[in-house]
Length: 362
Image (cartoon, rainbow, N blue to C red; front, side, top):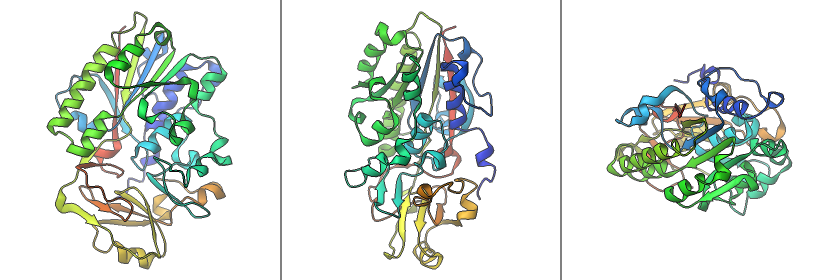
């Protein structure tokens, strides 16, 4: 059952706008709907925003992590609950329908066809440098233009990918190899003087995908992350405020609930494996998904999660239908066959709810 109030509830865009407003001057502030963060952020000399990929609110609540003591709230992530959608929302301070990245896989009806919108391979990355995407200004461009000292810390292997180039200002991006390298870099006086640091941390998500949430491997990665947070919050002698959140949570999928999708070439399958976008006729789609547990919705229902396109460019990427796979189930379309333990992209509470964790030294 679709939550028809989904778009009205507090979400990752609301939190990102509030953080942005705390970094910039009065003239640059954007409109916000909620107050989600402590007033301490307004008094901080240094603001850290750490995005722990895959650390969903319910995933975290299922542990005895000390981070639970600092959870202020839980909010929604984007629809779909996918990394590239959430990262674009944070960087552009726009909803997915406005910035134009609204799925793990997208489908361009005009030129490029099926697109991996996380990796953007050589065959379709030109869409990302189109006029529509190029006309957008990220928070990093705004910081640079207004001489606000900020840095964006990314794993070294993610630097210079097409998605990174779209989301981040090159001169603001600082690569790191591992946790130790990140701490050494953050300890540099140059970065301690920054007004704002954004840190993207992927390891919890990786372990959840491969081994599952609450596995031994996942718990080890969470402990490593806890140690990292303790050290980061002790680095600065100035008033330092750290907010930690996630792009989504993950759900373990039993092997008996995995479905390999066979379909005719008359329909196009894209989106995510739990929120599946489809182009084609309803009859052909219904036939392909006949044995998959879930709900097929049309555009009028999808609008409660992903509003109608406002221009022809977004219309060319927008799906005809969406199939919402039931909780604890997953599909494998032709282009996605790797079997993992944990998944996201859907609307379950595990996937969609993310924490707001606040830690300060004052």
